[in-house]
Image (cartoon, rainbow, N blue to C red; front, side, top):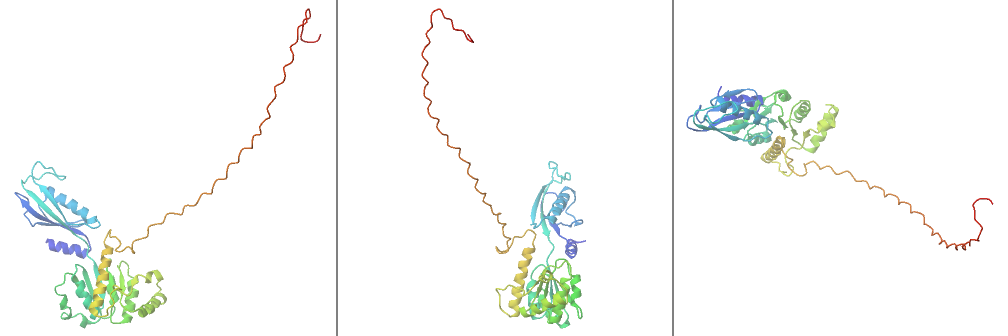
Length: 331
């Protein structure tokens, strides 16, 4: 399988991958510059020469496949017996540099209704690397002549002509596809809104139209469709950037495309909120309750001063009477 076919297979599977290319070669090497290897989550296609350099490249590619926002990178290898790699020695004598290019899963958009606004929107979105699905019940909206303006598209375009039930296409869309409902028939729009809310795995859902139209739709989705308010709120209407108020088809298309590209940015893994208003508020610190003041310790009772004890006068000395002995006890 060619590397182009391998990349196409990964895209169809909605599987990330990495394209590994031999960028430069100096001296002897297993493959020349330009050799390619495609690394998926479990499979590989092609070869850059085998051995240590290919095994190391596959290991790194698998790491990139699970990183949130991988970027291209270069790897350098010296091919001599003094360099021992994690998967052995390659002593061809030269040096090789490899370019690893992540192949992320592309965004998918489904435009229901390719009228005057839908076609202008398709012309803008077709300039981006996305999977673009164009659905309409009217065959004259999907003729080769009319869609010829998309001939040089970067996007992969999938055209669906559905004369009866355009909502059946919802089940065929890739996971995470963004849905824009803008058909010529309000009854068709209503059926698509109901079906989109019942389809698991879709990305955003947008509906073109006025506030009055949405009031009627919202009531029908609740009473006839049985959807609760939280489910109905998944539908964004009006679509586009509110700052752009023109009603010309091309102006509306620019507004809707710009808003959708902003959604793509917010979908990127690890993306930060685009505005301060969208950033979650920091939790406020819990209120510190004031500790009641401790009661004052009781003061010690006043110590009364004892009056000064006056000295007792000494008893007069007893003179000893000659010949009389004093004994204790009873005489």
